[in-house]
Amino acid sequence: MMALDSKVGEILNKQINKEFYSAYLYLTFADFFEDKGLKGFANWYVIQSQEEVAHARILRRYLLDNDWMPKMEAIAKPDLTFTEIIEPLKAALEHEKYITASINECYAVAQSVNDYRTMKLLDWYVEEQGEEEANASDQVKAVELFGGDAKNLFDLDHENAARVYTAPAMAM
Image (cartoon, rainbow, N blue to C red; front, top):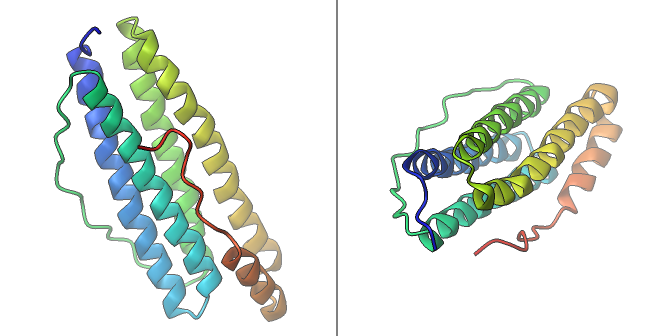
């Protein structure tokens, strides 16, 4: 097996940190919704946090399997504060766009050194980010359309409470 190009290893290691930061960020969103009495929305973001940890673990395993020692870096403290229910939802959408751009950057680096194996791994992340952005956008739209009515907000919260975590098939 060929060792990873240093540029690829370094950028994937940075992505691990971004995925762990995403998990921290989404737990703060869950806490905000818990405080507002919206346990369904809190559940949604706890599950989002679990997914982000799984994404980091996949990258970690990939690095290890390709003779690259991961380096766990400090995870920044999320510093966003919210007052309105829509705010963390919009922040999540913007954050997912940021992560998409970061995955695209990882892909570009792998492509620049003809690392097809890493590009294949990142194909999964590209598809996953499409789903993540769509889900975040759907949450924003639903609250914008229906969140102003208490009964509808209750129904949305109830719908989010039904979400369960399913580990990605490639998570290790």
